[in-house]
Amino acid sequence: MKLVLFDCDGTLVDSAHLIHEVMVRTFRHFELDEPPAAATHSIIGLTLDTAIARMRGLDAVDAQAVAMMAHYKSIFGATRLEAGFQEPLFPGIDGVIAELSRQDELILGAVTGKSRRGLSMVCETHGWTETFFVSRTADDCPSKPHPAMVLECCDTTGISPADTIVIGDSIYDMEMAKAAGAYALGVSWGYGAADDLIRAGADRIAHATTDIPHLVRQFRP
Image 1 (cartoon, rainbow, N blue to C red):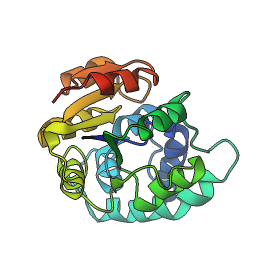
Image 2: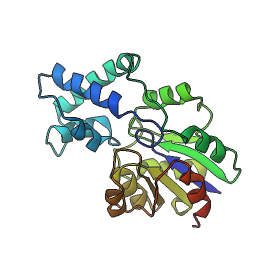
Image 3: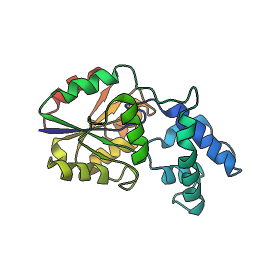
Image 4: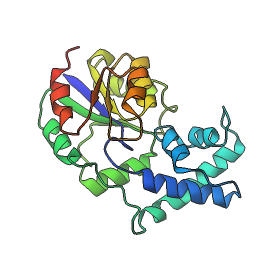
């Protein structure tokens, strides 16, 4: 039995435009300079308070980062409903998830910097409410690259990290996988460069969504 843990933003759904818009509105609300898109892309995958602190040049979360996180969460849902700010699936990912879900030897899960509510919204939108047997979010665990998300999913399923594949688009996903003792499968269509993922510990890189089933089948603990 293998556990396959998917990151969400940048791996399953293309949410960069939405995340950046909400981040800009949040910075504007606190009368701070609006961040460039590249700055937003660089923190996707981190939990929100840590991400906001880093975007402000801080090494640790402060009271303002917590306040900004609360504001971000308060406006996220309404912004997501505006035209042009949905979170579409990356091409082909729905078929990949369907294919993997049919394989009895695989258990699928999600490990994401989204809130629990944010992950639920994605799953409800795309018909995945029963797809992920286990999941951990920013509400449950420390920010990536801390290994807690992976290790807690392993504990819940009874599958060891050595039998676990983490699939993600950021260096934080790769570092988290390696810290947990799991296999790290990077994807090149998200917000992290393939070379950066390799430097962060990626064992393999999927360059198309349709590469994932083959690379999962090739994985031998």
